[in-house]
Every structure is written in structure tokens, then in C-alpha cells.
Length: 165
Image 1 (cartoon, helix red, strand yellow):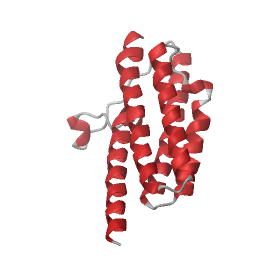
Image 2 (tube, one colour):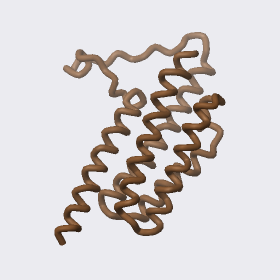
Image 3 (cartoon, one colour):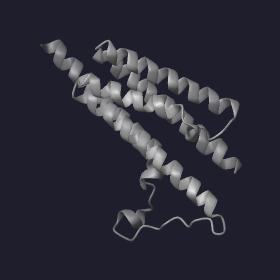
């Protein structure tokens, strides 16, 4: 029984860490990148749209919706790990795998982006296998790996792809 409680504590800690890392990765999309004034109750400053280019605005909105779907699948995985529902983990991993094959997934054709994307897909596949094998500990560790792949790719996209535009 003590071993099971220790295992649950590990999963909860991994879940909290994963949730924090995901929130940090998606903070711009979630509107969490606000100034001190916005946090103190002032009206948030909205980003201005690029005037004269509605196509870019539409693409940014579509990408934002797509990212939200990825975040929802990630939350499903985290909830599954925290509640020891590995079917939920499998379902969330399947959504991420399916989404990774969509054209909208590719924000760049750069070699480094493809590498990060392939590493992410491989880590989600590993998570899927561990969940199917009903191995909660391995699935939890695999989820941390998936989260780290997300963060590294998002960091690269922010610092390289967006900076080049």
C-alpha cells in the first residue's frame, strides 16, 4: 500500500509539473502574458491585428484554435494520469497523433522544426504504448517527455520562426 501511495504522489507531482509546463508553453495563446496593470484589475491590452492583411489574421486565428485543441488533448492526458484512467491517456494521445499529421501542424519546413516535430510524435507514440500496456509509471514519465518536446519546439518556434517573420 505504501508503494502505491508513493506512486500516486509521483504521478500527482508529474502532473502538476506537466500542467505548469503546458501553461507556460501556451501562455500567449491563453492570454496569460499580461502586464502588472492587467493583473491588478485594469482592462487587458488587446494585441492589435495587422491592419490590411485579413488573411494573416485568419491564419493566426486558425492556428490559435488548433493549439487550443492540442491543449485540450494534453489536459485529457494529464487528467487520465492523475485519475489513473489510462484509457483517457490513450484517447488524448490518439488525438495528438492524429493532429500531428494534419497540415496545420507544420508551421515551418525548416530542418530543425521537422526534427522537433518528429521527436514529439515519437514521444507521443511511446506514451500511447505505455498507456496501452497499463503501465502508469512509464506513462507518467513518457508524458513528462512529451511535455518537454512541446516546450523545446515552442521555444524554437518563438525564437526562430516568429523572429524571422
